[in-house]
Image (cartoon, rainbow, N blue to C red; front, side):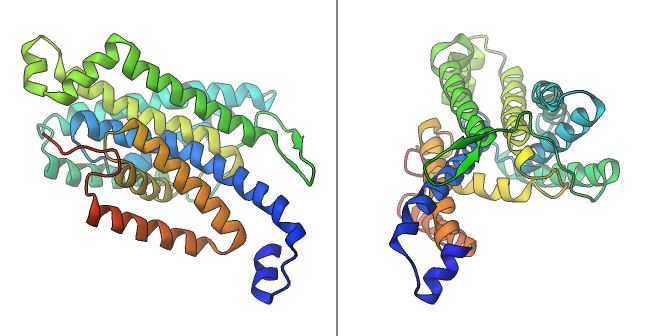
Length: 307
């Protein structure tokens, strides 16, 4: 805010540029890391199932709300409650997503248009369920630890740096799962040709259920990691959903590499532009970039046309 006011008033001191740029980059890196993990779940669901999951942001919200609930049940150090939330919240969200796939998406035979309408309905069911059971208030979740990393100009949250590192490890783990394991081979075979995969004995219905649950779990993990720096709120799923759509449109639906790269670009640019200028400008530039991608390369930077 101080820097933005200085720029507007024409009193910007070049000596301020270094610390503000570093702060903006760190904040952008946190957002990029969490966004990459969230958007990856959305991208995987579309890549394998060809389903646009409009309820993806609500799975993110559920992860945050469950993190608050689980950590509030456990007494003792915040680290214990946070670790419990990091384990159990994604499992609960994944279980709910698996049930939703079996009861709703499978019955619709994964028809692209029908599943969009169905997941919109699922969005409101989850949102109103959270409002009824959790309430309208935003509630904080304690960070598992509290220390600051010293830089030449300021101290920065050690927890936020740990969020970046954790997300990087998880992204590498997902990449290894998809490219180095039999599970990944089955997912890629199902993505490439559903009928042929089924003819070779691959249980496509189970693969779809697993992928849908796994995508929801990635969103829940991202929410548990970021909620100590924010607050759990029943309407907090909207921004992650919109930003995830922006990321997967730019990177290419179903592309792991494109999703991560687009998340880094969007996250860093949003952090830097927000610090130096205005948050609204960051959103406007992201929207313009999406429009240009849709006009000149509808499949995204790394996406391929659906078969």
